[in-house]
Amino acid sequence: MIEPEFPEDLSAYDSGGKYLGEVNLGNASRVAEPIFVSPNVRHENNVLDIKTIQRDRAATLRGYPLVTFDEMEADPPAKNWLIKGILARGETSAWIAPPGAMKSALLAEAAICVGAGLDWHGYRNKGAAGVLYFAIERSDLVKRRLRAHRARLGLAGTPICVSSATIDLTHPDAFKKVIDTIRDAKTILGDEIGFVIIDTFAKLIAAAGGDENSAKDQGAVFANVQKVKNATGVHVALIGHTGKDESRGARGSNALLGDVDVMVTISGDEIKSVTVTKANDAPEGPLFSFKSDVHQFGTDEDGDPITVNVVSSEEVSSQVGTKPTEPKLSTNQRVMYRLLSDAGPVGLTLEAWNELAKETGIATKQRHYEIRMALKDKGLIREYAGMWRTNRSRDGGASHDL
Image 1 (cartoon, rainbow, N blue to C red):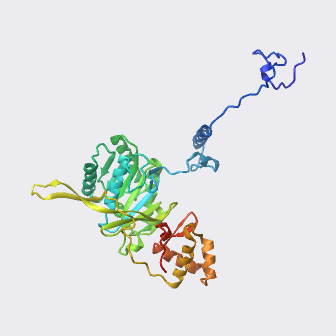
Image 2 (image 1 turned 180 degrees about the vertical axis):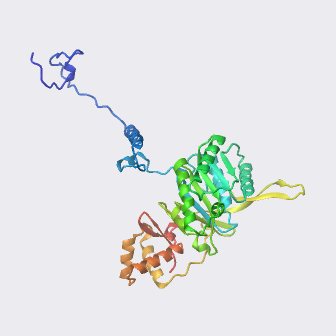
């Protein structure tokens, strides 16, 4: 028998390699059944391969770590949320308000919701995580607020730690002690720390004689904050003050605006409005509104009530705190606003908006920019994913009556 040089059916050989001739399969064709591997399994295997490659490469690299274009597929595109839409692991947020505007009270409530796995003002909790609150300013007040929420909600064992130590993040190696403190908190609480609050940013910089008006001092702090996030994966929330002119945002150097992923302002009197004024990859505009409430612990030795101001659990419409008066606009501002408003909820690209403005007689790009920034500063427009839209269209379809 002549053996085929390249037999297609390897089953025609015995275990010793001897050719057995044609295998009679009857009327049926011998077809190998394909092995099905689910997309999830393939992705997981690919991720493991990439992680192995990166680990092996790290042992030989002489410079900084690198990730190739294809290796980026190993990381999930969705953010690792603590509170979906607001607080994500590995990011920094700034919560800005004038004195007495309940900003620390609001973040104390956020700490409770993250630690206890509770939704926060309608925003979904994506899994309880440990919280470390650096109460550099008024730590006793922070602890009383946390105790008030504990009593109101009947909580126990919620993974929250408070440090009243004065921390310094202005020196190159200052981040190491913060990382050690986060790890200590994890050991004490038995839970991974996901949320770190620093109250306040001004005290943080002043701790080492820094100046919040100095971009250099702020830059040093944010470099260390980034190192803390890189090592621990936490979200860092900074509590800060507005300047004398509240409409101009945070007090001090405007470097703060460029270094945070999300900036939130709190305004209003009886009803507070919480608004995103800057976000790297999320819409800007109103988040929610809230009211304050007084929690009473009991009475002191003189019979006087022992109280603390906290965020009320009462649901408040986001429209209640809106001022009824409309901002004043120049003629050109009204024209450009109307062009954008007429585009509806879809909005316009910057190029399309500029072209429409040229057709109305507003000719130069410099004028377009100045008008655009003026409208944005007045809270009338926002930009997201390359599209410009009016804020009023998002708030239920109302338009600016011009």
